[in-house]
Amino acid sequence: MPSLRLPRRLRRLPGGQSRHLARSAPIVAPLDPRLTVAGPLDPSLDAIRSGLASHRRRLWVRRIVRRWWLALAGVTIAGAILLSVARLFPIEMLPTLLIAVVVVGVAVWLASAVHARPTLGETALAVDAEGRLGDRVSSALSLATAFPALAGPAAEGTDVADPADAPVSETAEAERFVRRQRLDAARALGIAPTGMFRPRFSRRPAGVALIAMLLILPLTLVPNIQDIRIAEARANRDEAVKQAAKVEEIAKELDSKGVKPDDPRTRLATDLRDLAAQLRARPEDLKANLARLGSVEASLHSQLDPSNEQRASALTSLNRALSRSAAGNPNANKDGDPKVTKEDLKNLGEKLDKMTPEQRREVAAALAGLQSDAAQASGAAGQALRDAAQAISQGQTAAAQEALERLGQSLQGTADQVQTNRDLARAASQLQDTRRALADASRNAGQQGQQGQGQGQGQGQGQAGGSPRP
Image (cartoon, rainbow, N blue to C red; front, side, top):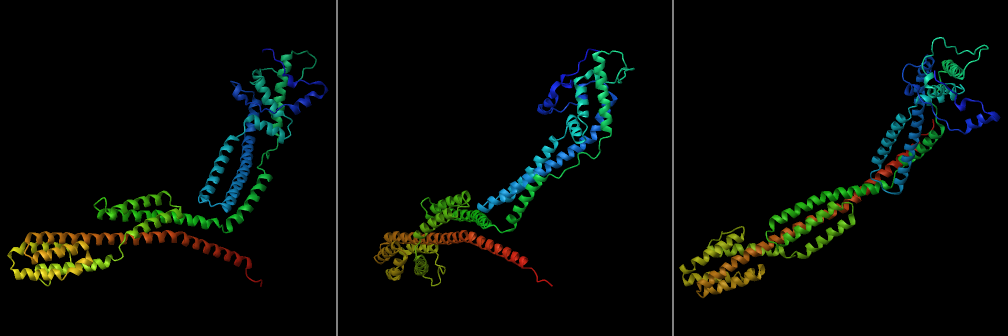
């Protein structure tokens, strides 16, 4: 056996220096001998390791429970802070944040519980402290690690008892000391209380958690005025997205009717697409959205002709009368279609050469009688009708045909203007409905929130009043 010397910390120091060093030196958990020693271990050392296993599990449970109290205190404090801040500022994601706090708290607790699994050396220190074993178990593990040659089974004939009078070497004395201390530690561990390391009630974390819960209770039950703002913002956002889709549909409908780039319907469709993009990009900004809607609506109203329906009625009557005069049929073109009128005027121009002077005068007189109606429908139509009547009465066939063609085109153009004005008016009405829907969304949400708060307060007062005592 090689020469062995006891470590300096096991020797007695004069003047109480050992006690001073014990107080000032940091506590270091000894290692598990199985990690440093290969081969079989001393039976007493195996008994110490197996005896520490059950204490190790109970110590781990105590640490887990302790960290559970700490996690509970942290989660309740974070929840109370979030609910308090939600009283000052609207936090729409408050439920999600509260769930996230709980999830994070549980995750941190689980991670800390895994990390808190005690080592064999930490268990030995805890057993010595709580079982009042005087560092027996931890010293046995430390000696086994410091003297790995003595961690295995003793050789045959080795006696750990003190020799009578025969002198012994320092190596033999060290071995007897280590093995005798190990046997003493194993016996002490065997009679140590088995109820050590029961989970404790952590007063401070539990008190903090209780105070936080007492704060959370009124913060949860008392109605929060910020809920009204959150409901209004959510209603504004949902309604803005909904109305953006409707505005996009209006733009598509106008695009299908406005085939020319300079058509007012095409320009309006472009403005409506920009409006729909703003509603989707900033759905919560009610003031900006209403202002943009009002601007587009005002610009649209400025393009509308207030006398459009009167012009449409006059145009329908004029088309009907012109068709009947040109075709000589009192039932022609009952709907007043400008396309039918244009075709009838074209046929009239082709028949002029076959008419007698008397027939021409009758046609010219009939057309001249519609002069006022044509002027009311369109200035260009009135001028073309005047030229056609004059040319027909004078027998100028070519000039009459050209004037009749201009008259048909003018009537068709006027009909297109009437239809364009109607499309713009319909779009203006739809935009007005959109603006009202946006304005009413937040108003209705606010009223519902106030009603909910009133019901909650009424229920609270009813519960506080209770029923009279019998």
